[in-house]
Amino acid sequence: ERAFSAGAEVGDHMPERVEEMLAQLHRAIVKLWEMDALSIAVVRGYCLGGGMELAVSCDLILAGESARFGQPEIRLGCFPPVAAVWLPRLIGPHRATEVIVTGKTFTAREAETMGLVARVLPDDEVAAAVEGLLDELSRKSPIGLKFAKRALRYGRSLDPITALRAVERLYLDELMATEDAREGIRAFLEKREPVWTGR
Image (cartoon, rainbow, N blue to C red; front, side, top):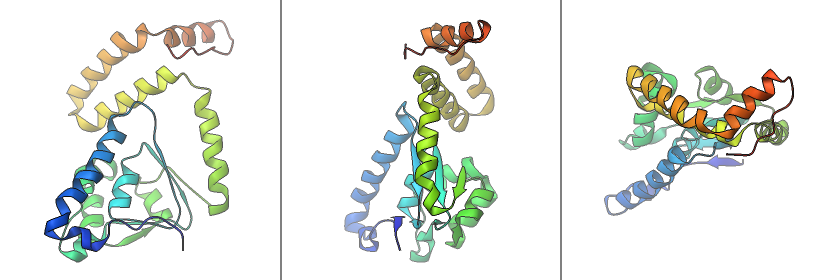
């Protein structure tokens, strides 16, 4: 069966290799979190361990019905570091605890119900859905998308009051200084489609 990722090799968890394995995974995940472009994980088949940590670090997850999600590290007497930090923010502390301490594998529908996955589709419709989403996003202001992602990042990583203040400053000081923000408002008021410049 095809897989998004079945996670790291179990041997990579041995003391002499685990530090480098985690460092590589964490570098990739931090890049996903920090980049301005939206990231989309498209998952079919198994998405386990570090593979699930990578997927949930993306901005959106679209899953085929064959997708199976899980953090089986507890079966090895370990825990998933990224999932321990990120899952409580995404699906709440109780669900995150269930995922991490049981090592259970969840279906795509279960993952959707818990808020882990944005959308579940038949496997043969996933590619078309991704193309449709990319087409839809291509009609949005690149600057608007960049600032929306940054605002969402603040909301997930800061306490609510600090996040609100940071997002307000981002909106007023940076977003509203862009040509695209002014163009979007003008186009709406003039009842026409906006022409985005990415500036």
